[in-house]
Length: 304
Image (tube, rainbow, N blue to C red; front, side, top):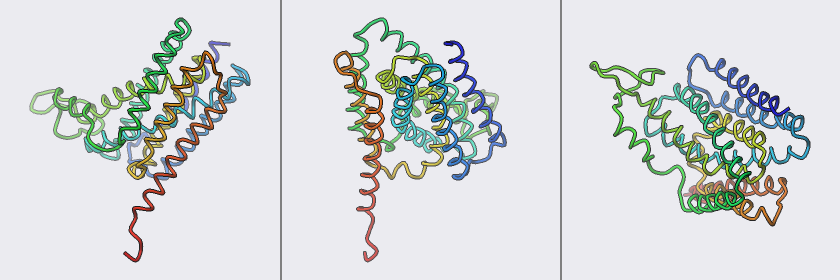
């Protein structure tokens, strides 16, 4: 049964990503309409997978799966800001964005599997690790609250550009090109490496957050993986809106703080998964509403 559970998530990811790759095989820029459709598809796949969790883990695991999925989606909004900064900083053409994001997701799925397996094993063996993870989440919450997502340059991209021989322009979908007899990395490779390294740092926050909901490796990884897969299309939908949500980072910080305190208090307080779902949705929803209201108040009146 354990083996078939893992086969189910691997098959779901392979089939979904295969269809996605086939549809976008022509390498054209993804339209807002197409990105919106794929966002709905990925969310639908994530919701429908709850039935698979029910089949292999029982009814009690389903709320845990949905709570972990929602928390991962909430925290992954930070990734979208990083995508924006990297693509704008390197001036990645629109028709290449989906390609590099697709490969970035494949790498992220591998790294998340390693983080989930290692994190769950550590929690099972050493109880004190839950306090370490909780502290990491609280620190991440403070960092998120004090930051201003989407502003400034990405120091990682600057470092990579300075320490790697990089070509002046892109060479289609190639990550390496030859100029004047020298083999050089293209800006597309810098973008891909930047996305992968950034996801490793984000996993340090998001994996412990999911583990605060469930210690079941299958539940945690499937929720993380399916949430990550939908990030590409979600980014393409929200690209123009991201900078219009000035208070969103406070919502993300609140989710991190809640999950951190939940993990720290786990030995004494058992917080149901439905509470985690309600808190996560409320934090992000209120942050979005506050951002939209702030933008509306800043807009000049028609008579001005």
